[in-house]
Amino acid sequence: MDYADQPTDCCSIARTVSITGDRWMMLILRDLSNGLRRFDELIGHLRIARDVLTRRLAALVDEGMVERRPYQQLGQRPRDEYRLTAKGRDFVPVLIALMHWGDQHLAGAAGPPVRLRHADCGAEIRLELRCAAGHELTPGRAVEREFNAAALDG
Image 1 (cartoon, rainbow, N blue to C red):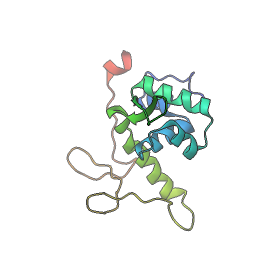
Image 2 (image 1 turned 180 degrees about the vertical axis):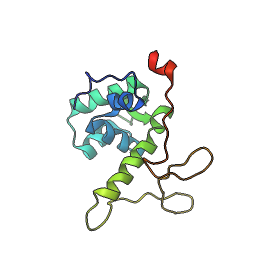
Image 3 (image 1 turned 135 degrees about the vertical axis):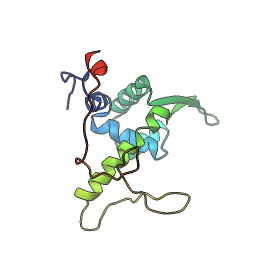
Image 4 (image 1 turned 90 degrees about the vertical axis):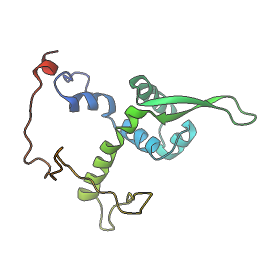
């Protein structure tokens, strides 16, 4: 889907989708967050065309979500591996939210294919929506929108 003709100046969701809104971007970010780093690993896991991966990685680098880091294996030419930056790591909860939604609404009879667990204690990771005062919210309810006129105008 092409979002080029959609306005992105009035909505943070539209801005985010303009960067990450295609299938490959989400899957590349997922794989990078799961520890894949090298171009050939990504090609093999995603089964994506080389030129498509090259363009998507370049866009993520340009956006500051991914950085290139050189490496060289003995006897090989230097290459780059790809790692999430702080901006890219800040996107991981969005991926978890998408995964949670898919687990809730799209999992088959056998259940979700992957469960996320806290590495330190083994407890399953839950997705929660809370206000700054600590109240748990039901998504879509009890939410008020406060518009920032300065951000909308400028």
